[in-house]
Amino acid sequence: MSQHKDYSGAKLCMWLFLFTELLLFSGLFLLYSVYLRRYPHEFATGGKQLNWMLGAANTGILLTSSLFAAMAVTAVQRDELRRAVYLLCGTIACAAGFMGIKYIEWSTKIGHGIYPGSEHLKTGPQGESVFFSLYYLSTGIHGLHVLIGAALLGWIAVKVRSGKVHATDYVLLENGALYWHLVDLIWIFIFPLYYLIL
Amino acid sequence: MTSDTGHHIISYGKLTAIWLILLTLTVLTVLITRVELGGYKVLGALTIACLKSGLVIAFFMHMKYEGRLLRLLLFVALVTLAIFIGFTFFDVLYR
Image (cartoon, rainbow over the protein chains, first blue to last red):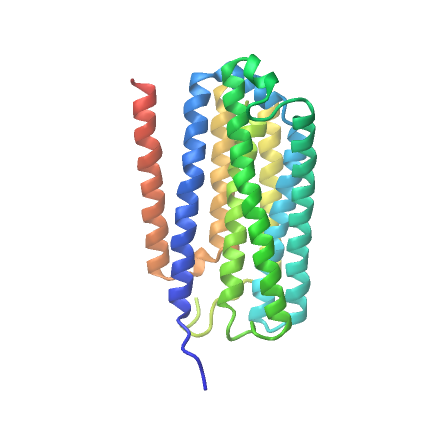
């Protein structure tokens, strides 16, 4: 018995979902640019406190993770299932590295008393408080997406391993990879906006 | 573009080439924002970010090889986004 599979429908749904995600993050970027105009100096002071080298390292890690995810799709299409599992593990390892660096960044900032509602920000200029609130919100929601994406790809890797996802039925992997690339896409904008241009 | 059942397969080599371009563009972004260019560095950094997104969407996300429906939807989403951002800026800049 063969199940009915609507390949184009599944992918269309995934893209529609990705568009809503895009609009969610665009809202945050819009807030950022409106407040940047209102508090240019405070944003500059805030941005200079972020470590751009850690941001750059995370950009490299995420781009590499995206490469692995895209390669995993190619591997499954060519029925190289074992390689696909390894590549997905590579993506998940990159995700762990990304979150590790994020942890270092956040804990350093929190150690310096910089977190939403902290005394340091409450007594300082208002613009800086807005900057760090937006920084925590944007990187926080992005980090949540990294965790969800990594869990999703881990689940898919198990399915590839058990042979449920293979060369003729791999839309699950393709959609999982699409989600992962979206996470990468958002970071491509977060990195210059928060770490570089200020 | 292959038939309906056979989907386009992007080779490992091509994906790696795209990845190298993305890394190069990242280095370029860092370089242009480390020198003092005033307002141009914002423009430069965002232009490169858009370029990088284009590459990710076209190749990693296979959009270059998708049919008309998905490409049209992407276009609609981007136009919506442009209106969303454009009109907010009209409000913010000329209030």
